[in-house]
Length: 393
Ligand SMILES: Nc1nc2c(ncn2[C@@H]2O[C@H](COP(=O)(O)OP(=O)(O)O)[C@@H](O)[C@H]2O)c(=O)[nH]1
Ligand SMILES: Nc1ncnc2c1ncn2[C@@H]1O[C@H](COP(=O)(O)OP(=O)(O)O)[C@@H](O)[C@H]1O
Image 1: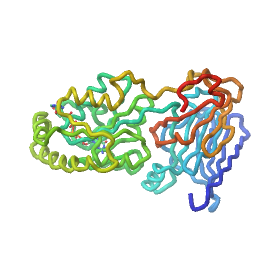
Image 2: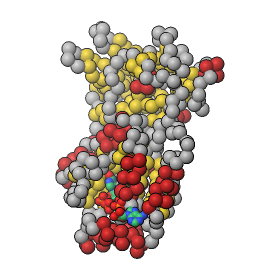
Image 3: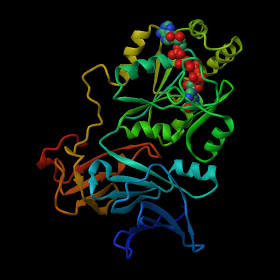
């Protein structure tokens, strides 16, 4: 956004047609026009950018699922993102961010060589962070994840990666992996469809944005089984995740498991074992993994994994929302902004259960963010103490 401080100005232009509402947000030399345009058949949430210096309109590539194109209000949160609040839908679905210069958007802009913006959805309450599970081939990652998904099918969802490797006998396309051709996968990567990718054991593997988005859209906690390079890429991105590395009790045991699985040729086993040494070395990289789990006895390792994910005590997930009825239709619009908060006011005076007519969105809670990366938003009612609301930090 250049050297200058961004200009924090918000204009709302309501264009002539009754079904057409656009907001213009000025950021330095650019004006972002965000708006709904209706024709007879469909309603779209268009984004265009006016470059003040060249006096030209730029039509950016828009990544991520878009808001449901209702009436909205918008405000610049900081030089990275614009907050968009939709009206006439549930409060749970009404808070969105248009990322204009987040690290993810910068990276995608570089990959595509053209202007990119990206939508991400705000989720009330502290959403459960995705879980990245890495470890050498044969250590038991797949086995542990399968146990978790079996025990908690409603809580967790698996991020189905793309790979150029051939399917194993029992693997199903679209369930275990999306088995893809190299050129198509490379093309999709260059078009910004992937969150991360890496060359592993001679094949290309990657996590598409869609893979994560489809899990988080279902309200489930996303599990990513990716290699150490992928974990590093995710760690360097703005995605907030929990990073777990699974270690074997010994190298000999790892080799034994790989052979017993019987899914690789001798040559592939040798390659995987060579790579395992490097991966085990990297597991101690400072700041990369949050937890190391030794998979010796499967059952006790699984219990330890559950502990790390706060599953085997009576701990309720901390993704609860203080708004008791976040599903009820709401009509909040942006009132004003301070350094740390954006205030939303009920337009109709009607409030959803557990909320107040004035809400404050805590800007310090805006972590994570890119397509599919639903964020944990902290929102509190201004008269929260009187209401006896819970879950407010
Ligand atoms: N970076 C990255 N690694 C992946 C992805 N999907 C799988 N992997 C990793 O690729 C490696 C090989 O996976 P796979 O061929 O299924 O063999 P396995 O680990 O022996 O079961 C493992 O370390 C996986 O964690 C992905 O989307 N991105
Ligand atoms: N704790 C364990 N003890 C013995 N065998 C295990 C254990 N965990 C997994 N296995 C076996 O080791 C093999 C490799 O496990 P898998 O889950 O496919 O590893 P990864 O997904 O890490 O490559 C499988 O045959 C699995 O049944």
